[in-house]
Length: 470
Image (cartoon, rainbow, N blue to C red; front, side, top):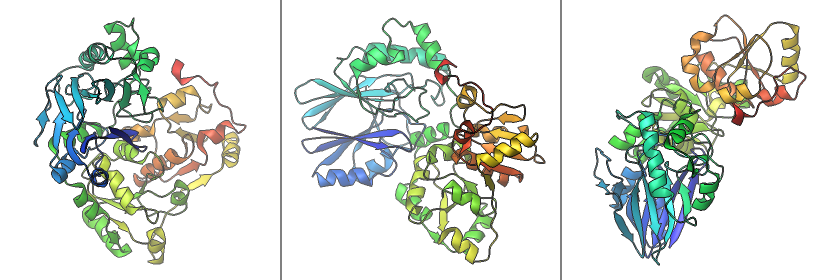
């Protein structure tokens, strides 16, 4: 028996490759599926099953493409309804895989069809659970993402309480826990950085598994502090339920080199968004007018999903050399399948073609400190609410709204006013500045180094409050 976790940091997502006696099961595969086919081929094994723990909201799964390539059966838990062929499992149904077995435990709560897959080893021992978004390390799945459901989040939270206590917590303490996500995912609020654990440890340390916890307490604590889901979550869930274009088709279209002239023509003809994924320091020095920055080196896919509201939006790319295919791939993971190509030669080719470029002023904290003390300048803090409440720059000219919801807050600021923009370290502030600049806000100054630099300067900040106490 072989179990391999295939973890993707950008999505904080774990897919799983399980092999026994030449038969393979893949759990929650990523959009690009050839890696699983190649792995099985290298081991002279056949992919027999593709298990989906639920309709994922934070990424587009590769289950449909993988089934087409391999003939494997897609298995969802009870209640799943799709526009393509699946095996809808019954609660406690067992699937043989080589010398082992995988048992379906229906664990509704995160979503109605959510299921946990219990691996029973060659000796009949309950060895591990693949818990999807039902149980994380340190947390449980948020119960507010069910699509087309007339149930409330309180109803789903109550279901989750029952699922955990009746299906999960009754298992032996030495059962290994393989969750679908780790820290950085928006599918929970307190996820551990660890990606593999043991059930007994979770019973002791996970707040949601306290033995003396009532259902009412569970519902209250699980729902407390959950931020609104990113706008793309419901759209990704529908793609996973209804289907999508093959990854290879998406990649072939998006990984197309374009001359500056062809790039500009497509941008105008198709109304394409120009997405620049280079480093923020490079972007502020020179970028194509009206382009948006979201750097490939940061939390790229989730930020794209949070900020670009139309999944069908035509996109043209400015990338670091050699990152073209990776960028198209990472866009497709969250359902942005309409990439039209990339600028061959990058920003240098654009300059050499004599085309216009723009810049954003970015200043070190020392220069900002002098300007701040010299007079009333407007500051825009785009960190998350918890970061701001925990500690921020003092002053009645400091305004805050989280980058996540910048599209909802445009009317809170004045196009005629100059703003000094900062985040924690400099990545998100340039994203925010690029979006605002493209919307006609042209009096923007980026504070290089963000709040980390502000905190280490002589500027006044509020007393630190631990986020866990807020």
